[in-house]
Every structure is written in C-alpha cells, then in structure tokens.
Length: 173
Image (cartoon, rainbow, N blue to C red; front, side, top):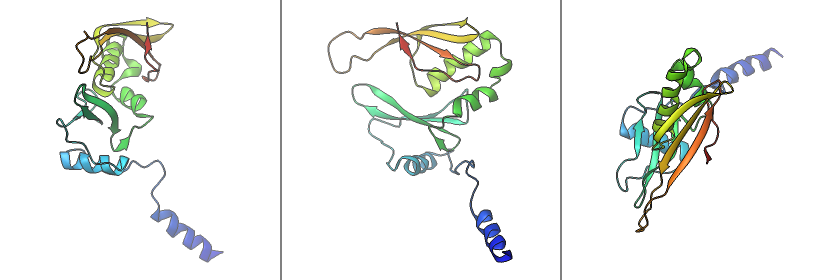
C-alpha cells in the first residue's frame, strides 16, 4: 500500500492540473504562429497579409483570422491567454474589465469593444439599451458584396449581453 501511495504521489505531481492554461508566447509573430499551429494543427496563413491582432480593450485576447480575396480578414478564432476559443474568455475578461460594477454606459462600451475587437464585427450605428436588466446592443452591418457588381446589403442585428458579460447569438431584424 505504501508503494502504491508513493507511486501515485509521483504520478500526480508529474501531471499538470486539468485547469492549467497551456503555455505559449503571444508576444511575437513567431510565438503566435507556434501557438496557432499547436491549437489547430494548421500553419498560419500569410496569404493576403497577416490577419492577427491583440485586443486593445481585453489584452489577454489575441484574435486570428484568415484572408479571403473578396472579403478581407475573416474571423477564425481567438486565444484567451494561450487557450484557443476558450468558452470562459468573455466572462473572465469582462469581469477583469469591471463589467460587474460598471454602469450601463460603461457596459455598453465594453460590449461594443468585444463585438469589434474579439468577434471582429464592423458595427455601424450601434445603440445600447437595458432590457429586462440585460444589455442589448443593436447595430447595422454592411455585408461585403465580394467580387460582384451588386451594391452591398446592410443588415440590422442585435445581441444580448448577460449579467456575466457573455453574449448570445446575433439575431437579424
């Protein structure tokens, strides 16, 4: 029994905790490239330029995209520290930015920053309001017409931010 306990202690000490964040270096392009490859198994695309940037409002977030010739950079995912597409990123980063104690105006600013910087949505004519105690962001987005001659369509969206700073799906009006 003592031998079993000894070996169990050694094995337990050698294994990282399940909730430990992976280690990576997002301070350089090479580090971001390596983290992306480790997370997705693919090389970062250099076609059309580098579609990668750190959020200015949420500095633990680093957004990665891929370039499409007729659309520009298209959102693919984000690192939260070193975790790729972390389900807890929004709640964690909104809390760090002061979401819980923020007034409606500040929450609106944080919500719009998240949509622009992390979700990579080009918001136009955005409006925020409180509905049933939740922050609602309504906005317009001009869709790309791609390589066609047709004028781009403009679509009206809204999304609701929950008490923890996370938001649901975008809904179209």
